[in-house]
Length: 279
Ligand SMILES: Nc1ncnc2c1ncn2[C@@H]1O[C@H](COP(=O)(O)OP(=O)(O)OP(=O)(O)O)[C@@H](O)[C@H]1O
Ligand SMILES: [Mg+2]
Image (cartoon, rainbow, N blue to C red; front, top):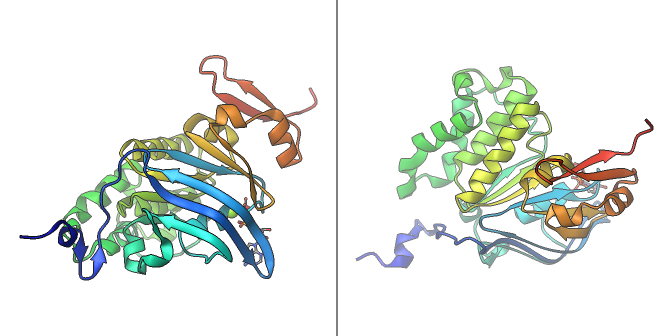
């Protein structure tokens, strides 16, 4: 009889075990990262839980992409620790990490000459040789439908517009079906409809049990869709918590060095963040 351990191990790889809502999926403790000899992140303590959307916001250069890369184990910390699915990232092999976290890099300027459907299918590579390779076709189909790229399936990725490519890149990440999604500015190139679509997808993934960490510049989107937001400032977390509590005009005006006003939406009460402008 297959033991539980064997059930979740294929060719030396430990397959992910299901997570429960509220479980820590990614954790940074006392994280410090330096790049080019310069400290870029310091004293970062942050946890992304199963079932939540966690937004990372903050000005250009604050360290959002660096933090995402550290959570993805793509950047080694100078000090502190990153844990994914309960274990230090250094304990997982690259193949095991690929089963646990899917990463959408900032401005995926990849210029694959491959058809869109093949690009999305690349997300399934980590599951090759496992029982869950059976899910390859439905995972690709579902991810393409969710991101509204099905009609581009046979087109070369390199022949798409910027926003269309961004949605295909997200489809690849969704097809991977990892319990931790690390998305760096997935809405940056998107029109209004597709920004909303992508944030609804983030919520659906969280509702299905994933931990979703998403870098956003649009504070209104973060306020509307994230359970919690971490505001980064000069490599540190200035504040973290529900957007309705942490998005104050004083805090945001200071961090962004731009006076902003924060209003409750007249119908939903969700904070609206707008720069202060002369009338
Ligand atoms: N390879 C590198 N060498 C040196 N410094 C770097 C390197 N990569 C990034 N930095 C610096 O680290 C800081 C944080 O960069 P990061 O890309 O994390 O910012 P960000 O918050 O994602 O900004 P943006 O909103 O512009 O994407 C910046 O000051 C940046 O100039
Ligand atoms: Mg960035």
